[in-house]
Amino acid sequence: MSTTPNKEALSTMGMIEDRLISLQDVGVRLALSRRAIYRLIANGDLPRPVKVGGATRMYVSDIVIYLETLKSTRK
Image 1 (cartoon, rainbow, N blue to C red):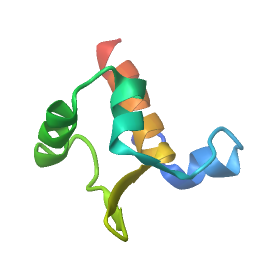
Image 2 (cartoon, helix red, strand yellow):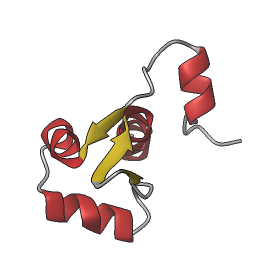
Image 3 (cartoon, helix red, strand yellow):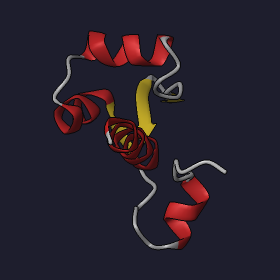
Image 4 (cartoon, helix red, strand yellow):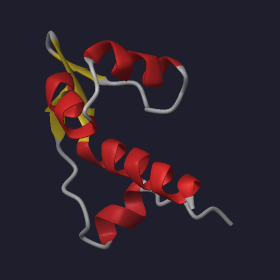
């Protein structure tokens, strides 16, 4: 049994609002550069972003899950 929360569990608990944000906003939330975000995506640590028109976006829930995973691995 995995201790990593999944997107469905978090959204049913009302813990996150699942909306799309820009990679710039992702960088601000994670305190990372755009290049570092793409490295995390390439390594499989973050899921691939979504293309909306010409814009690249990520779900807030994916960022929350990534942060929760980091928390659970440091204990």
